[in-house]
Each structure stands twice: as C-alpha cells, then as structure tokens.
Length: 154
Length: 141
Image (cartoon, rainbow over the protein chains, first blue to last red):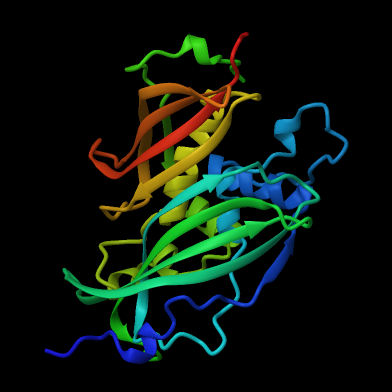
C-alpha cells in the first residue's frame, strides 16, 4: 500500500510561512476571554479599566487565533478533514491590548499513521509569536492531523 | 483572584477545578474569536459526515479552559510558563471539567516554578486530554 506522504510534502520540512502581523485590541481580548468562560461577549469593553491588569490580559490561548499565513507555495494537502492532535506552548509573556504579534510557522515533520479513520497525515510544526520589537512572546509546537475525504471533495 | 505564593504550594496539592457546560453557542462563539471555522464544531450533519456522533469541542478550546484554570489559580502575580496537551479523545458539547495536581516545585534563577499535571474530562469524568504545565509563582522573600 502506497504512503500518502510524498517527496513534495517532505520538501516542506524546514520551510517557514510568510510572516503575518495581528494588532490586538482590548475588545478582541474581552471577546476571547468571554468565549473561554462561556459568557456572552460584552456589549462593549471598557479600555479605561486599567486598574485591574487582568482586564487587559488575554487568556494565553488567544495566540491560537493569530493564524499563520499559508505556505507559499501551499502545502499539497491530500485530505479534507482535519483534527488538532495537541500542542505544547512556552509562554515568555502575556498578550495585552496594544500588542502587535507577528506569526511564523516552521514545518518540522510530516508522517503517516493509520487510525480509526484510515490513513492519517500528521504535520508537526513550530509556531513563533514575536512582538513589535521582535522579542519572542511565545512558541507553540503543534500537531495537525488530516484524514478522511479527499481534499476538494466537499 | 487568589494571591498564592510559591511557599504555599506542596507537592500533591489539587488545583481548584473548573466545571463548565460547553454549549453549541459557546462553540460558535469560540469559532468566531479563534477563527477556527471547521464545521465539525458547529454543524451536526457535517460532523456526522466526518465520522463523529455530533459536534465536537475544539481542541484548542480544551487547552484554553485548562489554561484558564491555571491562570485563575496562579492569581494576578503568577504566570503560566508552559502548557502541553495531548488530544486523545473526542469531546462532544456538554458538561466538562478541568482538574490538576502539583507534581513538583523548584527554584530556577530565583523564580519559583511549580509543575502540574492537568486533565480535561468529559461528562463521564474520563480523561480525554491529559497535559503538563509549569506555573511561575511569586516568592515571599
């Protein structure tokens, strides 16, 4: 049985995505934090409420909403369905309102496993998050699993 | 918000758990703020077509709920330094809980660090997402 991993896919190991920058607002943090706590989003957030720094500090996982740009050229994804296999974050500092976060993803490995959904493609990557000054805010090692229906079939 | 110090923590201590009813509305809300619009998280027919029983909770939302538990425990002056999670089971929307316990503590470069095993549990209490975390806590001296 042939592998779903091709030489073209392997050629992406070591490749980096183009950098993309996100400006983080107080409102965006308030909405993200509300979504994690299962609360309705605030009608408006109060940027004057600087007395409590927690009101301006984002849940650390807001970093996941800063999606890296697609690889150029794009990765030749064989499957349509995608699962998140897990992640490992190192946090250097919190994300706060006013931050400008630049995101770059580096592909580190591509391999195949067989599971309950048939052949599954595993992609291991490291995502680096840097602030306006170029200082590292956090890194994420992530595992993305694609499987099932062929890409473009749905 | 608690103000726990490094000296207050003992190996074996339990982290204050989080219990939450993750509703379809919350999954839609999370999809919007995270930009993860994969339909298995809000479209039942699509999720079933992908082999699931119903819509499933975003993996990153499970990690975010664990991080929120740790941030609330660490308080205003503590900081989450590392969080690693492994998604070993699918979680349908519904009652969930997050738990954790202290496995080690140490001082590095004058900073108090606490290692914690964390667990995301489904409505039956089964662990679907285990993980490890390190939290920095202030020292009294």
